[in-house]
Length: 81
Image (cartoon, rainbow, N blue to C red):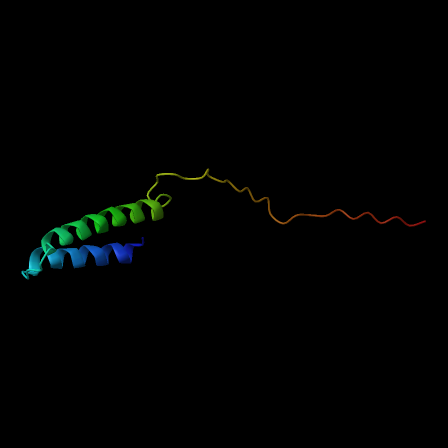
């Protein structure tokens, strides 16, 4: 689940939990809203942790040092017989 879907689930869940006051037979819309918000929050946290591991300093590869000695020279010997 990506960041966009997680934010969408959070928004839909918040609307159902806090703004909708309709009554549906056999369905509690507030509970569904809270469930959607929880799933969205967990998905958002997971997406941020997975995509940001390298950029937040969690797991990194080793550092690489490059030493440049200038242009490579090539020795060419010419033999005349």
